[in-house]
Image (cartoon, rainbow, N blue to C red; front, side, top):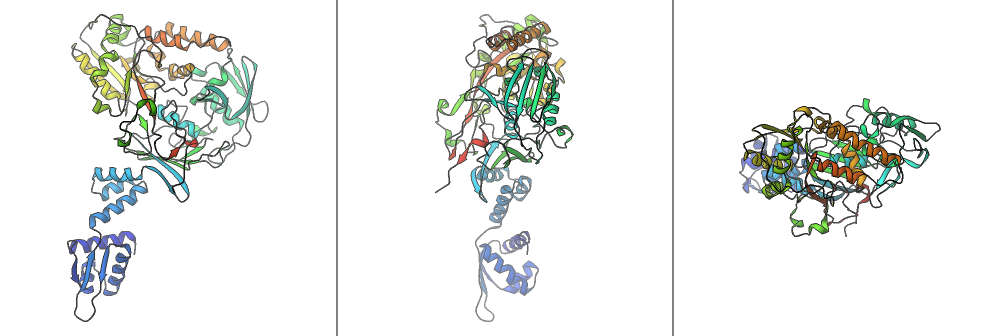
Length: 564
């Protein structure tokens, strides 16, 4: 008899006797369960083995046997739901629990954390949304960028601790001239599908990458010898190896764009491969043939829980254990900020009076006090005075600026964000006090960075996803799919591009990035709002957890001590 069939029989038995211990006989039970006396003995014995009931058979003709219930119908349902949750079958589990979301949340929380199953070390993490696009050639949000680093490798990477470029797929490189770079590729590197990495994979990927503004000075890519890649540039660039550490330049198979589900199940060469990706769970499994050191954690299992949107990442959903923990000891100030980007091309901000009004009325000092702490949860925000922490470029506004006219204003930001709707709500209140109406659009990342609706937006609310702590990390954000370029006067954008080109061509020149940040803020193009405290909870048994610039941790480097 199947387990499900046995549960149905138990439910009939429990319902018939109302869960009360009683005296009965085999014939009565056979009639309740619609089976023969012979089969009813087998059913009772199985229920006894499961611990659901106790059966004390009577001795002597005409005497009644004793039936004792050790489990209830609801307990059995709960046990069945727990099994379904452990298998990741959340919707069937919710059906079993009769759509009781609170009970489902409790069962999910039981599964989160760390565990060992069949000899494998598993870390389960909660997150507030699904990961619908992991293709590095597409616009990626902060967490997707982190996951891409676990799945893919570039020719180079930035060591966050040293803040220096180091080899990844390339073990060495040299500049044959400032416009000609040669990279030597590690041999016998395998993709997650078992295919060997070859030069064509690298060439095809970089040919696709060079259409992006950040890489437009790439002229051609070829392979003059086995495991050797030559990249020719249109202009001098002494810092080209650092540029190739950008997540957009990680290497994919040459035929990746033709693969079905490439956005959900991308194939890379990294320490982890994607084995599950849906609206409820995202699961990574260690790649045994990774060319580097094999990951110490076998499986990273991320569960999508809409109520979890914390600013720190922990392998549990219970945040009570962190109460009283000092911010300075657990979290780091986000490398970047939330900001307002004003459309100075086709939006209201192309008028200097409107721009001055927006910068005054929507200043972070006006917004932060009105944010409801209960609504933004564990997110800890602090006023930003520049694009990066420590940069102070926001001018002081001493006089109140009035709205030039009564107009409708359109604000847009990324959908499924835990904080932006609350910031937008405060902005709506502030503008309403001046007789202005705010229309809010929540768009997908692809819609935002592809330029859809760009001409109709007055203000963008966004955030920076920086891959490391170096100043030049802001360039990938600045050039990101022309989002800022579409909102910025062409002459000002070209001036910044020229300063970047000069820096690339002069090995002795200091980074222009702080001056770029100053220009963006002082011109009114960007209004920095808040820095956020991000990090990981390293108070548990998982060893080696250290927050990176994305607010996550390097999955392959953490491990668990065996429990005694």
